[in-house]
Image 1 (cartoon, each protein chain N blue to C red):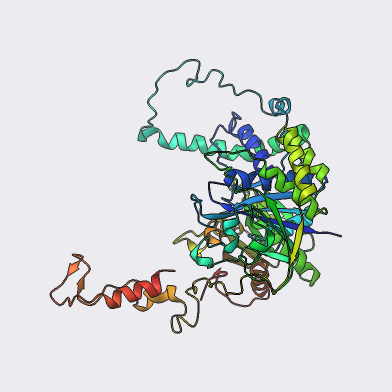
Image 2 (image 1 turned 180 degrees about the vertical axis):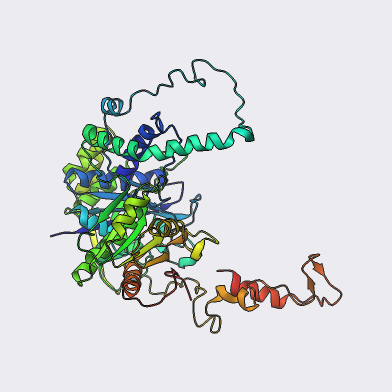
Length: 283
Length: 260
């Protein structure tokens, strides 16, 4: 049966960029060993990517090219089989860009999917930090501190291959440990890293997180978009305002737009201008 | 191009075409930013031997400007010669379609990947009533949407342009004249262009003009700034193209997915 796998890697921008890129690249290569086509791509939460800002990589793998095309047809996956969090401080939620509001770390997980996190904490310490999810999911904790395998400094602490080993354990339909180790030997030419993947595969344990577990608070939502009828009840087709004599940015009454200074009638009142700017010209 | 393999292959072909003495013009390759440039996919990297076989070492021969004989030549063309120089470049461009076809043919022989028609790719057009025309990675959602719409009984096809210059006007017009209506999706906008269209729609409209029986043409603008072109967007556009085929009057250019 045709199947599309999606994996999300949530990381700290720049500081963990190389780590996330390594993981997503190796996912595609390991799946390729088993004849599954795939693609990986970055998705900057804050574009351009900046130090420490939460960012994401995605890997999409399919059983055939046609199914893969269905995955590529979307900007980014709406649901993932595995979500990887390489810094447990992101467990409280990802606020990558105010546009999206706070995204629970488990937001994109499909029902029954697995959230893999690198942490020294135990699962029962981590579960209350993540937001509650309506459907059960599995949590796999990979023991370790957040890896700083980034753009400027690459700390090769084997976090990348250990995560691949865990993936082979929690989602064997995606790829096997053998394919992971073969990929590691091809790409890194390092038998020790292949052994690290094996150890992670052997040692990882998962717990099921039920809908009544986790942070019960409602994560705040993204800002209302300009199209929201509640915020802009009479402003339909606002791009036509200028044609009807209204402009999106209007100087306050008494402001001389030619000299860019107050005119004689200026009363020092900015309120209309600032309100209009805030309401209509900014997201 | 809509995938990494095609991007690599096109780079080799572009050198082949640009360095050909019959053309001898610079060749620019455009890729969708982020969608294609910032994604990683498995590509077949050809061996150096095969690349050398397809693309021999660049040899400027006896040309005046030569790295073995560094000289300074004033790169200015005075106004009394500009027209002749322009005509010379135009002649090179007019010869380029044949050179491009040759290059794709040689590429298929050497590397075993045959792209068929170099200038545009047709998808499910054989029995199509209406057709969507587009460029780049737009093909991903369009192809998936077409497969879904075909299950619903809608006979939709897709034409993906590969070469924008030279523009295969006659060949494209002949192909598009088969359909009841044509919708051109532009992921760009040419401010002040005829009918306020995007660049591709303007070109296709001009290409279709000499036809005695031109199919209705709809210019569709969407996905600006990298906004996602969703499957419902494509289906919505297809409905509009079908409406155009039925003779329903509607604006010649329409923006899709715009917040209202």
